[in-house]
Image (cartoon, rainbow, N blue to C red):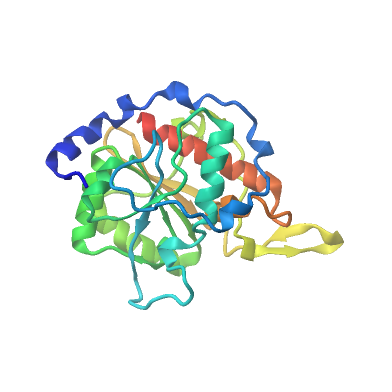
Length: 276
């Protein structure tokens, strides 16, 4: 396993130049992204490689539960929607772009030096996360050096407070704002002028007339945290569950337009992270 240290951190600022924007040319429309992939329910690929395995290798943040408890079941909070979300997203990227994509996510703690090898970091259920002071400090360095964090799948006032308790220790003095319609993130490939709320599968129910409807804890908010140069460092999907939209891409009950929108946002997030 190669050594990781300051020399790897110095190279982090070169990530944007190192990735070819041309690799992300669209080759199909994301509205066709819903398909059945049986292999997505039992992948066997390595999710702890010593280094990135492809031009784009998704990283998923591991963290401690804020309550100090261990969630029941085989998936901890940080691994909600895994492995199906990654499996569908990576196959969607291969179908919809020309990007060389690793088959699975890399699972990394904020204190791991390998964090600096991955420009795009995904954290789910951050209404349950807790970052120690050491983790918060290294996450701050990661973001200030050009890293991009997407947080997803948390809902309501209590989970918002849990999220902000840790993110403001990582980024003290920063503010959270609504992402403006003019932000490059929303136009870098797809023009994302549609802000439809993306629900979790658990939020769906069959309404009058047999139509599938969603009931969430509040309105969706696309928020973010910026650095001094106006670069978006943290994209915040609040009262939404984009990971579920990827996970259930092959589920006929889950609304296809919401899956398609989640793919568009995911692709825009990835291009933004690799070029800013």
